Structure formats: structure tokens, C-alpha cells
Length: 165
Ligand SMILES: Cc1cc2nc3c(=O)[nH]c(=O)nc-3n(C[C@H](O)[C@H](O)[C@H](O)COP(=O)(O)O)c2cc1C
Image (cartoon, rainbow, N blue to C red; front, side, top):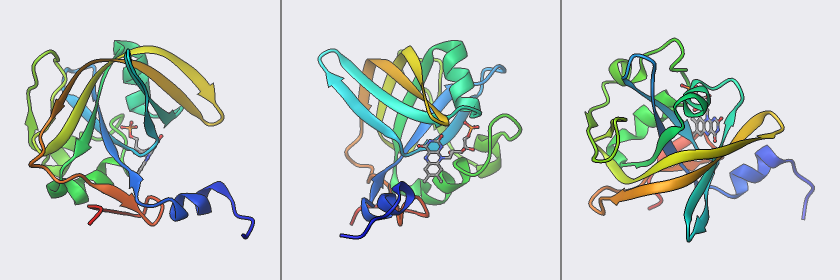
């Protein structure tokens, strides 16, 4: 075994999960941000967690509105997932710029991408400082799925977005 650092380890653990975190902006429209650092925390009750840079707009909107949807993007969104991970909703309307088609979903006023394999609707329970990120710990309100969509993953660490097969 060779001594390595965490970014190098993230390449060895590829493919890594990838989500589009959907939050509601002040004007009511949806912001999308790419997040790999998420995990199931509890099935009963349903809970998930995700970590975002302290400066992220999605984090700010999650703290403000307490509502957030984690979505697993479908294959058609590979390019857009990279785009949502390289611009901030603070200054860019990513949905319009990237031409991402959204759908309404029951039980939420946050829209999500049409090409979504799974959507986890959450309410923020608490957030904890973890180094340069905040860890958002959320209660799961509802979950929706669409097996017809093929899930995307992050490869080579977080450098490429494509399905697992
Ligand atoms: C594949 C990939 C995975 C990413 N994973 C995370 C993550 O887990 N946490 C995070 O804070 N940022 C992550 N990012 C970077 C954010 O998506 C990026 O900082 C984005 O601009 C945040 O947008 P926002 O300010 O609209 O929330 C990732 C980017 C890519 C391309």
C-alpha cells in the first residue's frame, strides 16, 4: 500500500455517487448544484446527509428555506451535471443557461429535472460545521423513483460524469 491523500483516494473509490441538489431561490425558481458527498443516514426514520462548501448558494438556500430535494440525474444530463458543478446559482441561472427541462413534483414547490432516477424530498434537521464544508442532516419527507432513467456517477474522482456501465 502507498500513502496517499483524500483527493487521491476519491479517484480510487470511483465511480462516486452524484446528485443534483435542488433548492428554491429567492425568486421562486430552482437552483441545481452537483454534489457527490451525500449518504443515507437512517432508513427508520428516513434520513440523509450531504456536505457542501460553506460558501455554496445551495447550502444558503437550504439553511434559509429548510427544504431541499436530492435527485439522482439520468443519463441525458451528463454534460449538465458538470455545468451545475462549475457555476454558482448566486450569479448564474443554471437551469436556463444549461437548458435543463424541469418538472413539478407532488408535495414540493421545488422543481426537479425531468431526467431523474430518484428524488429524495427533505427537510433540514440541523447542519454541522465539518472543516471547509457544512454537513446538512435532513429528515426524508417523500421519495420518488423512475427505474427507466439510468443513473450517472462521477469517475476519475469528480472529473467525468457517466453511467456505471
Ligand atoms: C462531480 C462534482 C461533484 C461535486 N460534489 C460536491 C460536493 O459534494 N460538495 C460541494 O460542496 N461541492 C461539490 N461540487 C462543486 C459544486 O457543485 C459547486 O461548488 C457549485 O458551484 C455549487 O453551486 P451553488 O453555489 O449554486 O450551490 C461538485 C462538483 C462536481 C463537478
